[in-house]
Structure formats: structure tokens, C-alpha cells
Length: 222
Image 1 (cartoon, rainbow, N blue to C red):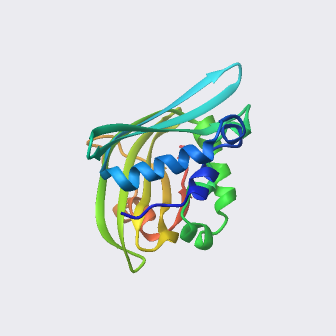
Image 2 (image 1 turned 120 degrees about the vertical axis):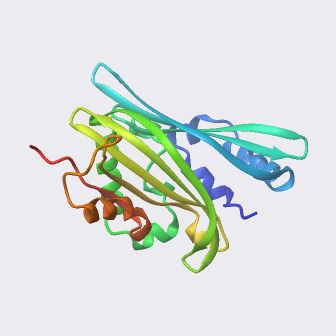
């Protein structure tokens, strides 16, 4: 099993967490040691997202739940992130840093797109609705990799969106590990037929497979 470095995980944490958590670096080292020596398999369980608004301040959070199969039993692992906080930017644990090195090197304007994504999530999205996910072993950029795809509906005042997140969990090429793409586009409701050409919607659905980075298309005004 491939593992990312202590420094990589440390940088993913928000500045506020890094400054206020005692011996965070040592805790990360212990987590990696436990994963290497005891954990034989990670099983993704589910993903929940939420948005809270209070006195004009919006906070977008995400929790990813996993089961770790270890020699001493099954452990539960929760990864909690603040995707956006309009009042406390130093609390944010989500930025383009979560993207893989490969995506950072090849995706044009990734930092600007990450800012646009955070604004869209905090200002327009009312709720998240996860509906399916998949994990596969496959060839990725000519490397052997474990990839994961997570699919959500985003409810907004202007209509329903679909969000596809694709990431590489493990790879023989360490530069590929991390999020490779996030795609957001107008979604179809169950049993609804597209009012636009089928090939256009298919292109949206495969954006993340064909393009690294962040792709967003907005609802058109009627």
C-alpha cells in the first residue's frame, strides 16, 4: 500500500489547526505508522456535506467516513473538512492543495477555480445529496492506481446540479495521489429527459475523466 508523506498531510490541515493543535506533526506520524503496520484495507462508507448560515456567515463542511480493517479489529475513521468559511479563512482545510501534484501542474487556473468553487458552494448550494460512488483499481496516467469517484446532487435556488469528484487514493506514481477533478453542471431530475442534446450532457458527465482540475457550468436563465 502506498502512503503519502507526513509533510503532505500536515499541509492539508488549515493554518488554524496547525497553530493550535499540540504536536500535530507527531500525531500524523503516529497515524501513518498505524496505517502501515496494522491496517490491511480501507473501506469507504459514505460522505456527508452541510452548509450552515448565521448572521451572514456561511460555513461549508464535509465528513468522509471510512472503515479501517486492522489486525486488532475494525476501526472507524472520520475525515472532517471545512470547505469554505466566509468569516474565518484560516479555518479552511480545503483548497487546491488537496489536488494531486499532477493536477496542479497541468490544470490551468486551478487556484482561481478553487476560489470560484468555494464561492459557489457557500453562496448558492442549499444542501448536498450523495447518491453513489465507485472505487476501482485501474491504470491512471500509465501507473497502477486505486481511484475513487463520488457523485452528488447539489440543491440550489436556481435548480439541481450534479457534482462529480474523482481522486486517486493510491498510485505507483506519488504525484497522482489526491483529487484529480471536480465537475459541477446542471443535473437531470429522475425520469427527466434533457432539453439539450444528449451528447452535451454526456460530455458534462465525463468531464472529470477527460480533464483534470475544476469544471463548472451554471444554469442558464430562462
